[in-house]
Length: 245
Image (tube, rainbow, N blue to C red; front, side, top):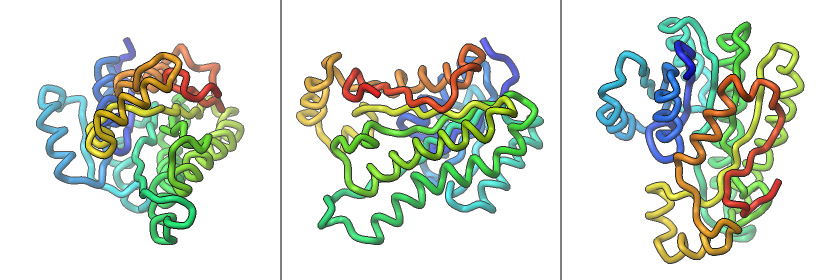
């Protein structure tokens, strides 16, 4: 159990992000949840009502440097700094190479790639001197598996960003890694894929099932914890073997 450490989770009010928040709280972290969706944040606040003393919620866009800097500063002021940053916020737009338009490309890259860059940069002053951890939530889409061009490119770019950051920040004791989920049973995925496609995705994976959000959260918690202090610049595929990195 890790006591009195502080984590910030973007896109933390739903799905994988909320599962990460729950797990980090269970592991003893104080957790800041940042999300652009006010209604989802309100629902998360209600669900986590028993954790208010160890919970901070903020509305901010991950690609807005001023908003994210303000949110990170507020967390650091309340709890003294940051020990972990989980860059989970992400969006997708459907379509193939001929169908996906420039606006969709820009929207996906703005959140999925610029967002982690901005969040990591503004949180860095609060991570320094604490042996912190940064975890990006990637995707097996980085290997071009069942994704739109923009989504695949954003998640592949995230791996390059993580490795650059790992080399730059390693001398300061800050680790940077990527957790790459496969098809994961979140509310959004259930609504957009449907049960038949979810079942088919599970049957294609070596372990013959789709991933649960809590399994992603377990990998994130490990990378944020003391047992992962010698792991950096890595991609951890949590996909039932769908992508073997």
